[in-house]
Image (cartoon, helix red, strand yellow):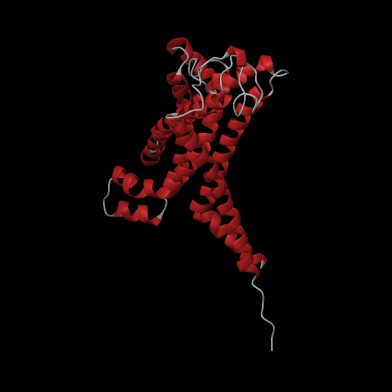
Length: 296
């Protein structure tokens, strides 16, 4: 009786699926936890984040409060919780604005082509030449530091990112048979863009949103570090890092904790973006299946 043959192809596919889902699960779990903390901070924190208790200043973790206190005796855990809400809310608002405007511009350029596409690409090059930090400094001179300055600066940098991604994927969609068929029966370019192109590139836009959210959190922290973010006394992770510079030798946790929070948030969005890309991009899945079949 012949022995039962093994199934290396199925095993490799299973391993790939586990790895793909692992990125999605880990990233989704981290972001879900951070969102839960941010929402919780709106209704409850261990102590008011702006409450100063000088007698308890620079207390280490678990000596006074779970994560200690800062140089003014404020509860670090409460500040981190409220800072989570401030960072995520600015990042989401900036990516929503930049993603919407950039996607509209990219889809329109793919439909119109010609001069409009050329002008859009040159405008993207100009914006890319000005990093968000420099843009925020210029906006701060007119608007003053604050939430609006951070959102506008980050959103301005996000527009060309989404415009380029959307344009590239939309141009591929315009060469597909279903778009050619829609043009043959007389549909307008606007109708084709909305009914056929946009739904077929939405997965790439969603993946780009998750990746850019991590970058937006990092950029917001940098703006707050420079004093261009939300005005005090509202806590932000970036300002907590800036304030901790003077006390690194006495209270290193003041810098370590917000730094870990920023790193965890960026890590979560990157893992979530990788997982969504593997799950939503059929070309990636097909390529891996072909490679597994050939190697098996």
